[in-house]
Amino acid sequence: MEDKTQLLRDKLALSKQGGGETRVEKQHKKGKLTARERVHFLLDEGSFEEIGALVTHRTKDFGMEDQIFYGDGVVTGYGTIDGRLVYVFAQDFTVFGGALSETHAEKICKIMDLAMKTGAPCIGLNDSGGARIQEGVRSLGGYADIFYRNVMSSGVIPQISAIMGPCAGGAVYSPAMTDFTIMVENTSYMFVTGPNVVKTVTNEEVTSEELGGASAHSTKSGVTHLTASNDIDCIQKIKQLLSYMPQNCEEKTAKLPYELGDEIREELETIIPENANQPYDIREVIHGITDKESFFEIHENYAENIVIGFARLAGRSIGIVANQPMSLAGCLDVESSKKAARFTRFCDCFNIPLLVLVDVPGFLPGTDQEWNGIIVNGAKLLYALSEATVPRVSLITRKAYGGAYDVMNSKHIGADMNFAFPSAEIAVMGAKGASEIIFRKEIAASKNPQKKLAQKEAEYAKLFANPYSAAQRGFIDEVIEPRFARRKLIKAFSMLENKVAKLPKKKHGNIPL
Image 1 (spheres, rainbow, N blue to C red):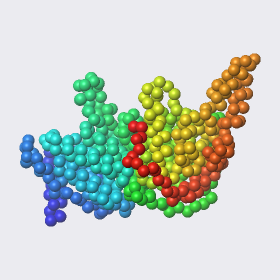
Image 2: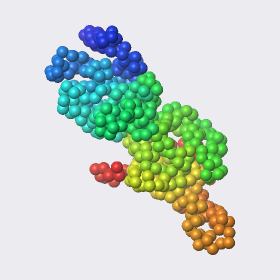
Image 3: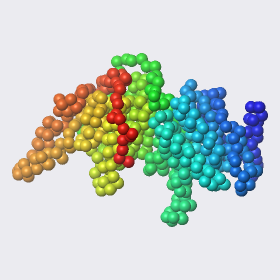
């Protein structure tokens, strides 16, 4: 029976279209794999077990009774990735353009329900023209059924969406509610309303790629977390991403084998410039601290003034949030605050410890920031870190000024361990700005205001622009030489491994969305 069913499916998948090309050949011509090929490359060899292979649509209208395809445009089932159980659905663009029908949605919902019951990740490979118009409200109801399960699964199991073709209209909201979205360059796009509607309503001329392609969403909107050059690259990134996560919220990510040495990294001594106004790449610090080639950056091209991603520290999976002095001097702004807050909440959901690297001169000033809600958006990051109960460690590499010092995982909002390099400056503001305010009258009355300002600036810096005042109050646990940072952090996270923290009993908090 199984061989007969497979033969029938293959026959249907290879049925001829205009021009003599098969639907599979047309898919390949676009540089895309078929749904079954994607599942094959994603899962361990021979591990895939299909569910619902014989399902067909129930529509009798518009001549649909004569167009029967087994599976109804989506391949669903379960298998393993590196031996770990996962559930997967892959929309099949060769069948009705992957359009979602009532039964198509039921198949996806069944997979999502099983993933929740068994506590395993759910991976969606999206490639669909949208709702199946011939089914009307039934297809719309199918989308809502999926959305509801996305919300119920959120924070319980990891959910990953790969956009490997079109994803438009209501279909975009399911990937938007999953934990991570990956888009394939040049062959995928996402938008609520397409170019034709945009032209009709706003008179803007725009292509699908410009409106909702991988580049647009990875740099401008932040909708997608990662981009891939092709389908195989996308599948490899899904696997890599999954390796940093546990199966569900009740588990921890498996620790990789690691043999400890002295763990001193001399290269960290030369990264921070002596001139406090000179930028440097925080990624160099991250690479110096973490296991070799373990850093996996998320949202690399969006809100570049903050760097987020996963890494390993002595084999342990950790999440990293780090100010980036190379962009906007590392200031926090609207987009970077949202980016870091979302990542923080994901790590907290799935028991992934957080390392926060701090070099922040404050929040980005300007009317654009204020009018676009830097207050409420900056509060998102403050809320996310304050709420997080996973092990939290901070390392101040240079500047930690003003309210941004508080927001970036300070001891005052519940950080477990806080370290600082000797180059750290912890103060309400920079020495020059502070001196101009505090000693304004004295400087104005001086015969040489510039000399007096420089003198007072040095005086203020000696008192406050260092980590020692904060360390005396216990706000900094230890001032460490850069070369010892990795060793200190390994020990800190090891000590915090069994941390238990409980939030006050409540239905849920009211994060400032």
